[in-house]
Length: 436
Image (cartoon, rainbow, N blue to C red):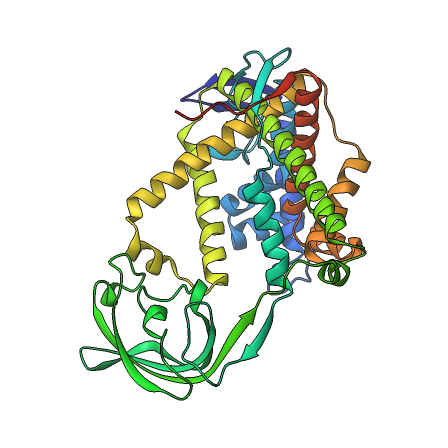
């Protein structure tokens, strides 16, 4: 076999492969035998028809295609290996010249991994601003615990106030017509944390149990439904129920109810410990991100548009699937945001992801960082914990979708490279800069 390599645009390489006539002929004869096994020819049992009959019945060109399909994967892999090509896409045949009794010549195009020029990635000094635990965040954490243990008390003797929870029936109209999907029965609405149309919850405040009334609101200009943007609407409302949220006081008794605490001081100490741990983790993550950003920014790589387009297509498909899972269509999204801007953002995200991946792989290669079975086992466990499935179920899914294993392997190598970067660069947590 003879191979010549031509560098074409960007990272596309053309392989001109010449296969000796004897190998090509053997592949052709094998293709004849394979085809004879499944082609029905009058007067012959399957697999028993002579070559000339098969050629007449099927055609030499179809046999040649079969021969190439069976022969070329091995030939192409050998050509790639011999020329030390780092291929990132499936090779594809662009042309061939196959004449029986002569050498077979084939042109194959492949995309190779773009060359990454690393900058400094070891011995860096990175300062990271501390994320302090403030009294505000401490008080907010205590407030969240209080809200978790809040009780709800039925209100019968007063109108609803801005912190109550109401149960309502509602029906919306615009221009005298019912709003599609604009009605609900026994709907629970937290008046203090409403995500309804601006002004909706506010107009329920002051109304009493069993009241029937109407309110008027205006849909926001950025509302997801094009037909309702900026439209005035009337809602008929009936109040079925009003409940008051009773927030417990922070006492020794409350602390004992929350956990294994004897008094308020022990509860507060535990909250501070939790916040300090969260602070340490946040600082660690921030330090990792800052180091990685420095390494990425220092690296140089020309990313071919073909790679960006493929990654962007994958990201877009994933985004649409996630939207669909929430009952939202792509069309609904593009009604509130320019489609070209969305696509541009996805393309930029694709470029960032590709560069990150290429730089990580380059560092792994330079430092001989490899994943071991234990690294994959760790990823299997994380996946199982996240989705509540057993490792056996994960393996079944991998057998059906091999790309899952590739994704987990990439995640594992990402983790090991980031561990390497943190071990080989110095990070210092410094006090936050005073705001101007």
